[in-house]
Amino acid sequence: MRIARSVIALTAAAALSLTGCSRGGGGSAATGGKAASGKKDATMIMSTLNNPFFVSVKNGAQAQSSKQGLKLAVQNADNSDATALNLSTTAISKQVGVLILDPVSSQSATSAVNQANSSNIPVMAFDRKPSGGKLTCFVGYDAVEAGRNAADALAKSLGGKGKVAEIQGILGTNVAQDRSKGFEEEIAKYKGITVVAKQSAGFDRAKALNVMTNVLQAHSDIEGVYAANDEMAMGALSALKARNLAGKVKLVGNDGISDALAAIASGQMAATNAESPYALGQKVSSLASDILSGTKVNTEETLHGKLITKDNVKEYAKYLVGLGDTADVPSSLR
Image 1 (cartoon, one colour):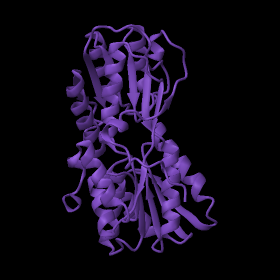
Image 2 (tube, helix red, strand yellow; image 1 turned 90 degrees about the vertical axis):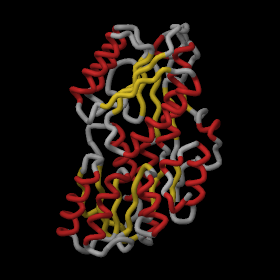
Image 3 (tube, one colour; image 1 turned 135 degrees about the vertical axis):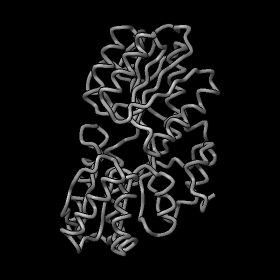
């Protein structure tokens, strides 16, 4: 089975120095090599705060910003492209030191990036990458790898055979596209497994409940499910519970939110590709501080998750506590 590089062995400090690769030379805003602006403020516009993953990103970013003397304003686009653009325009008009974007959709964020470029304001993005404009830095987890890890985990839990369903995220984002790509390429290697259903639930728990309910009606003999994030996995789990199928139908998710870790520990969920949002938030604030100080940053920072099963869920919980992230650890694992 292909396993992502372990994050458990990392200390909190090491988690903030994860590897990346630079695409540009020094000296320009696009590569993060310009002189310090003297500013100490940044605005982070979140796609949503109605999702535990992004709430944890915010918590990690705020905790790290307070350590580094960064004045960080966190704003919620509430999954609205128009709101995200309005918030970005306001921050740019105030000449914020760094604009940090978590795009609602990859295409829509391009306008905000271009505005920031025109105003000579460094702009960085995380988790979801804008389709256009020049970023000083992008940081996110390897989404293709996440899909592959999930496919391997699901196949292993099924003994390499069975009928499965894929619940996709917001298909207008590179994250959803890449997680789906990784899953589909990897699951195709298991000739005994057939994907009988594939549908988007928009990274949303309630939508995933409806999708999974419909899938079960159409395919009562389904044996496995991959949900592209854990919010959707929790929606799918609710549908499985309603039919007394929790733990019987193998369920794999992505993110490593508290509810998913608890479900794995109890045997109701087979695995999740955990991508600590708290560590991501810490990294975002660390990079923003570097940009403001004039420190050269890589234009791409790639983080790697960790496949979590019942065998290592307690170890992963200890890792989160070590980061300072007790909120993402279920009480049963503390």
